[in-house]
Image: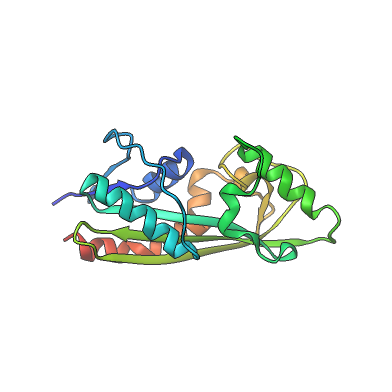
Length: 199
């Protein structure tokens, strides 16, 4: 039987990656837009896992469907792991864009010696209509660079140089990114739970 799963985010960049990572004849993947669900969920958790669960639970309640959400941040060692949980809300500028947040991050590092070691952190949460939930985590090590490179991805991808490569996240093709990214690793960790929970 095909399992219907709601990709519990309205972020189109995340949707694109998760739809590619979860593409399988076993799953019927839907987005909030497909169901005309438009939620803005306050990320009040103190960890990535808590935020992911909060978002998945809100979309599960609204849809009645098993819902999969993630919470992701970039942690820079020289900034005491900032922006971390606040990566999406890093800039105080009203209506700040991804470009604004990248520029602010690089500006804060200008006086710090390189390399600007960092990592992408991702927590994934699957919440079921009966209230049960499952979670997983993924990490991708790398460093922040001062100049943007690449046209792919979103968020901090153009200034994040992936460890073991000479490429930023934004320079990788979707298949390449989905082999090494933090989100890909978190999805890999949650797949067994999806298969067991939705049989």
